[in-house]
Length: 162
Image (cartoon, rainbow, N blue to C red; front, side, top):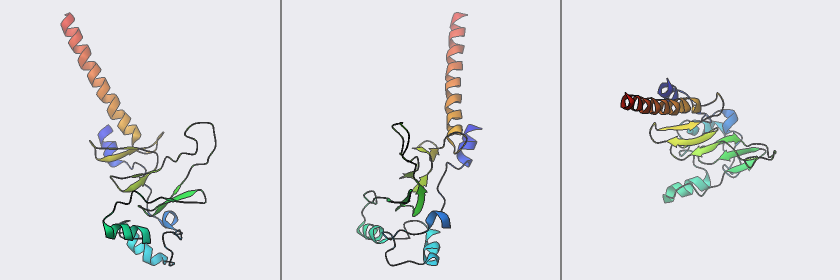
């Protein structure tokens, strides 16, 4: 159940919708791109929609890691995914107060809510908290592995004692 759930559940990818993509920040589309122009290109992939900075870096063959996300009105615009993502409220006393749980996965090239890590074994983003995302299935797999190891050790101990 754990591996099936992990492979078929959505880790929490920020999908490209009108609400997530618009309005475009002026830093990305200074010439006033139309929605229909951007929508056609956003369906292909984020790299096809080339803002001025992104286009320049892609032409030179440079990585996009140096580009900064655009923060405006409590949201951050990911210049790699071309989507807006919600930023947390800065409150509380926790050292994580005000730290966004949505991150850009450099392997999947997508923004993921409650991102934990990209698993090289399963080839998927592991993300989520509570009942959201696929973290519950990942924890199920880890718990099953620990139970299997403990059962094996117990069987060897009981066999040696007999």
